[in-house]
Image 1 (cartoon, helix red, strand yellow):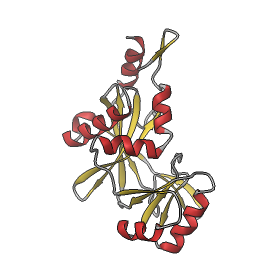
Image 2 (cartoon, rainbow, N blue to C red):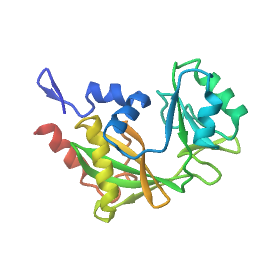
Image 3 (cartoon, one colour):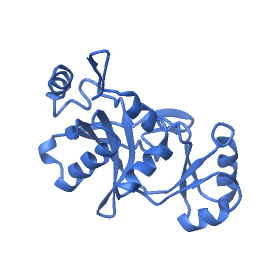
Image 4 (cartoon, one colour):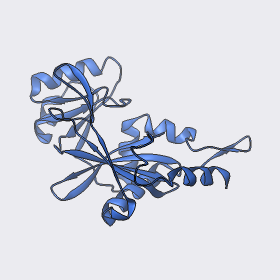
Length: 216
């Protein structure tokens, strides 16, 4: 945690800057050899079809400053892809294309000062493919299933902690896909959601750990 004017903070400005830009996060993780879905960054429509063919359909299209599944869409063919990319490029000069990994849930591991402090599964809502999705024109959220840290696979816990350290020593929510028996980091989020009865359900001591980190 960084200090300014003698005060400790959890969400330091550098972490916010990095996590607010998925391209910056991608390069931080890539430099540390953190496993991620195959990803390409495109700056124009030139060569878009070739890049998409390399990744294969369907693929995920992300704007660098997307949040809560906003500006994160799936393209099933080149026609859909070009339409999404054109729309996204009205608000960003660069777009991320990412290999699609269908799963029933995403792991969310909360990491503070380089150590995991809580874990849960964010279930994909029925009929959707994102945690926050639209099914039948209705916005739906997947359920949260808390998991005791002691029950986490060691490789999963270590991956989350390694990914967090690539960004800093604050509080992060690491989103991880478990696909074909392997783990892949999808996102590193600053200021992760912690709701009573959800993320804290199996690890209620997380509040003490956050207070301790701020007071030390």
